[in-house]
Structure formats: structure tokens, C-alpha cells
Length: 139
Image (cartoon, rainbow, N blue to C red):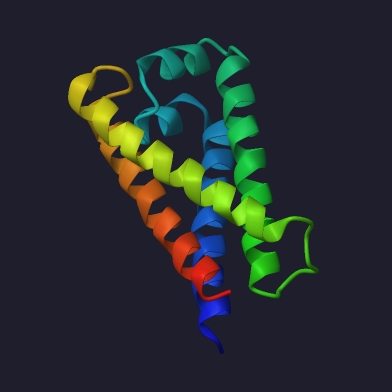
């Protein structure tokens, strides 16, 4: 196995896990939003049966699912997708930017969603970005 499939398969696996966790939040509602630190506003809306948390989470899930497909495409596990290199660079930029921004937000405004959420999700985003970088550099 070459380096590209290994790193891209790890990126795809991590991103697919994020998809499953987001689906779990939609399916199981407020307890899952609360456990994963999504913030009291999201938890309150989910408890009230409002659609906003599910809609927001579904949008994030869709994006993460598309990213998973692009990682699998780069690994050669699914047919080539259009603009793979550019999409991978975009994914790296978004994950890296979100990771860095979240660390700053967790430091200067931890009450917004809670510091635990910002630090955990930001480190996760940075780790995924690193996997996408490793896979893209060896692609």
C-alpha cells in the first residue's frame, strides 16, 4: 500500500466517524448535543423539538459526507471525482481554519458553546487537516 491511500483512508475514516456522530446527534437529540458540547442554545432548541439543530447538523453532515467521498476518491476507493486536488486543498483550508479559529474562540469566548467543545472540536479539525495534508502531499 502506498502512502496516499493510507493517509487518505485515515482522513476518510475520521471524517466518516464525524458523519456518524452528527447523525447520532440528529437521531438522539438533546442528550447527544449536550454530551458533545454543542452549546446550551442547541441543547435547548433540541429539547424543545425545534428543527434548527437537526437542520444545522444535517448540513454539516452533508458536507462531511462529501469530504469523505473525496478522500476515498483520492485513495482510489471510489471513482475519480471532479476537481479532487482543489477540493482537498479546500478541505485542508476549512479544517485548518476552523481548528485555529476554534482554539482562539475557546480562549477568548469560552462561554459560547463552552471551552470543552471548542478545544475538542478544534483539535479534531486540526488532526483531520493534518491527515488530509499528508494524503494530499503524497498523492
